[in-house]
Image 1 (cartoon, helix red, strand yellow):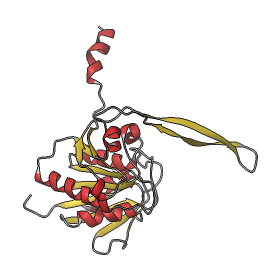
Image 2 (cartoon, one colour):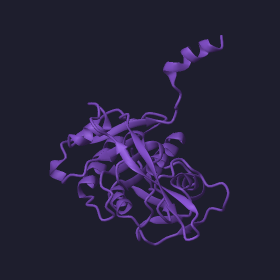
Image 3 (cartoon, helix red, strand yellow):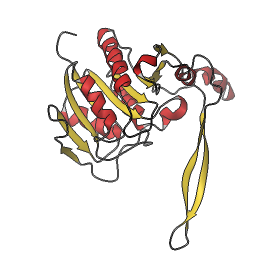
Image 4 (cartoon, helix red, strand yellow):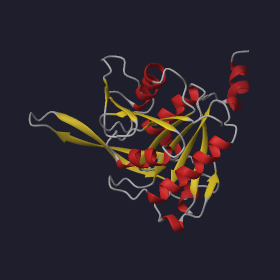
Length: 255
């Protein structure tokens, strides 16, 4: 790539998170960076967009050397506004993260981090979602930054496939203990949902979602297994959710 790349950075933990700061610190070594991120945490928003209330976009000085904005909406709102209203052109690369906590397996369906990357893929923009397997707000991102640098280098150097994005998960390990990077498939694991029933001051019931992510004995060659072995997992994600294996079978029902 001859010209300086235009890189758009967003996340779902909010513009004040340590993860996005770490991502910007790496991205700025590759090109011009524009940041548009939620003004508050938007985890678990999936591919939600704001339709029933106005979107607020405010210039922010948190990143002194870069054009940056806070958005009142979701991560996908940030991407849509960034591409159509702020940059008024397609960036060369969209980076989302670094998320505080993993986005493996079916978690990508709920993830605001990955939905921002998927939105980029829908615009045919090379897009990457980065997550560190550490939910601590003050997590150590030094090893993650090294991985982010390697992945960006590879993406800018090679022809990025159309209509996909990359889901990059980084294990919670010191940098010197990360064994490498593996390209793998998504594991088949789900949340074991539970709801706690509680009562407010008027004795009216409400519910709080809890539960655990069922990831025991993940299959070899999946993101969960790869991370458990000390490797970074990269899963190429597509937004076309057609079950091609079922097309012929379902068609026969209506012959």
